[in-house]
Length: 147
Image 1: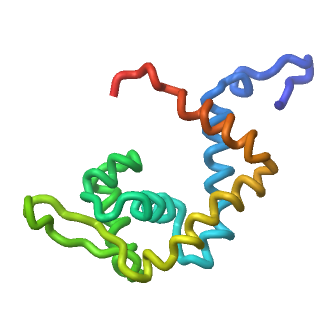
Image 2: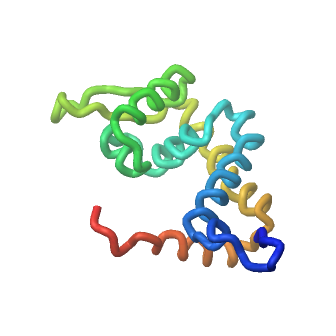
């Protein structure tokens, strides 16, 4: 942490939110060399993980899982569709609902996409146990909030 000449920590350096904000950006940037060969951005990577877990899934549900609104998730899904990794179709039960599914190429990327997580843990120089503890701590943040 950065200290002032008197040795006291600056107020900004004391902020948990600032440390988390910086760490989140650094970790997201760490993904770039692993995602570029797959032709994915970081948000697209997150969507692919969600789709590999749950496809087919409604656009709204996918956005909810990723914490993205419709205005953000729709263009992202369209880019995955243009890349040949995902497809959209109307739900046969409720035509108002748009489903997102993986194409054969999207399903074939499963191992490569899921393999990124282990490479990131290694790049962060964390043991699997450390990564599990950190993940648990981060998941508990904000658990008491409404919404």
